[in-house]
Image 1 (cartoon, rainbow, N blue to C red):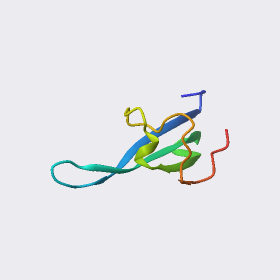
Image 2: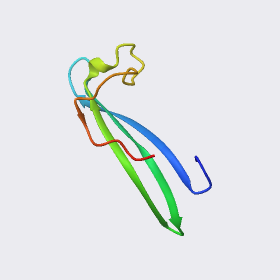
Image 3: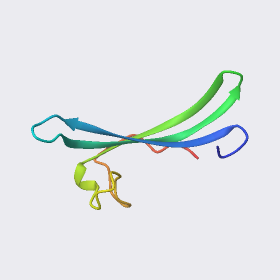
Length: 79
């Protein structure tokens, strides 16, 4: 929560290719944005979707490295 009725979020997931003997990450997906709760059971918000190549994770922590540029992305969310 960033305020009484607002929140920011980030979610990360991986596109996997099944293989033997190991599965392989083929992309890293990141969804970030904000949500404002406008009333009981109601909200509005934005999502910014970005897809990175696995090579964007040079340090192996599972996240794109700072400064990595996604080859596919939606427009950034408004603050």
